[in-house]
Length: 384
Image (cartoon, rainbow, N blue to C red):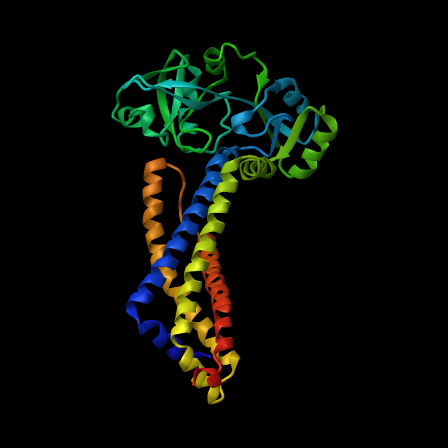
């Protein structure tokens, strides 16, 4: 098969302009697929970074909770009841809610996500949390997410310069005493961590003891799946008991199936595939039509339809590989610009690079298979 490649290459390069247009079309289709898949994966990853950072094994949430942005509170007595099981080592209540943050420079308000925790225990595996926990024991203080969007103000920059940073959170003056790193997501552009006492001061409409997430650490050697099942059998049915991985999957599935965003990104990928298929088909169809007499001559001297099909598919493979390279390179630039503009984790992954390459090859092969039907009409008797 490799001995036949020069024929395919010569046909493709005979008209440089047509080849350039074909490669540009394939690159455009690849960029479209890369961007849609990149944003979709950024959506999933950004919304589960919190879940992945939890330093625990099992999570309790209200059965009516759908995702972090739509949590329903439940009594912390359910969480402490889990201590009845011998395999449970400790429990940790977490409060969370959305509220307004006033930019101390512009005075504009913007919502962010606030977490309330007991500062005696670090339950977040996030840079900057552990070393600042003791500071949260003071009244009216918060830790600020350095990866929050710039619309909240130059908080991180001023704090690192040694300046005293204060801002209105829910119309209450709060002091920033430390920075941590979580990152923006599709659900929240910024994040704060404070103590459970300060949280209840901020959200004075919240009833103490009604928490949003219950984190459970099990004893060494215990199996999280087995303990979770024991808790499901032991606790009331108004509590959803999830292992840490199930909690991550729970959030991911919400964004994938219960919102329009996941569907839109998947649809965009499909549209990119279709656009590329149409472009490659038109290029290969024109290529076949222009060389119909040559193909008829090859048939006349004994070459089979299968041989001609292989030639066309080789052209499709060459187009796929050559068009993929500039598409990948331009996508890397677009990912960088997207990260800078949105602060979302839009990165190239090996799995995605391989997936788009496979889709590109399938796209080109499918187009070549359709275009080769024109060869059936290459009858030497009719042409000559």
